[in-house]
Image 1 (cartoon, one colour):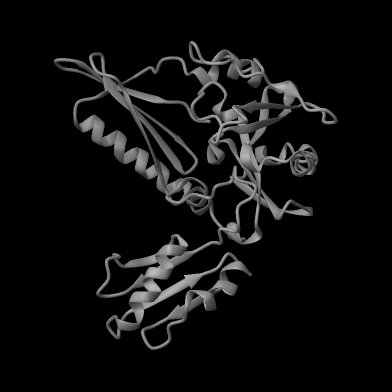
Image 2 (cartoon, rainbow, N blue to C red):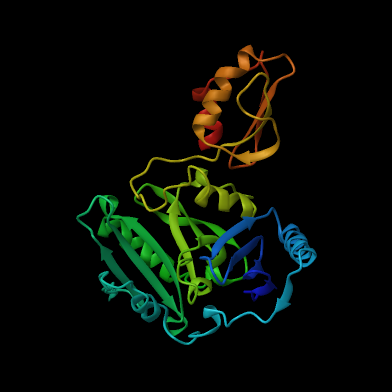
Length: 320
């Protein structure tokens, strides 16, 4: 993980601005000595674009009179030897219940905690530890879809592969040897992609994410930016719901006029409802209009006003 760079400018107030690039992401923090700080994240297509984006942002601050200074100590650089679960338990807000992470019978270095399991928004949280507890792989299951006989085989599968999300790649889509419930694959995400503990900077870079998926939900050749959009973007995959139906990949590029949608010259992540609406519009659009649909396998189908298909006819392409 790269370190934060901090820039300050003394005017009527002491203004500060900080940036950190990690892979395809640029993290920002800014504020002053008189106002609460703010933060944001930009996700770029690849690491080189992120590097250039960070350089442009830095040059912009320098032109505005900011001067680079030594950043304060990063919480992620301290407590690196403290076990993940100890830090999480100690980070509980005042008056909030302290989470009790208990060992899961039959599994080595696996701990779980039930959060309000009887509440409609309750969930079960699991940590598969590694490096003597200094790092972990985490997943959650919504209480309404939690079943011990489904979680157990996934824990067995994950325990044998607990190092996979830390091998330097952003993600791995892995076929399950036997189905977990209705799922046939698993997705392993690096700490930066999974954001399992983004609210806890001291352990954010040490906790990866894994969860079961349907084959059609993540593209076989997806770059990190597309996986990020699928699991964190608008209409993100509800990966804590283990009773969900498949949410297949719907990647679209199009130029349909007239249309409430702005033309998209390159494939972007969309939702099934977007595809349905565009299919409804396409038959009456201008003759030059077109729509291309890409499946999780990478195959594409091109549609024009006189060659349109129904959503039901496209579904086999999307689900494989």
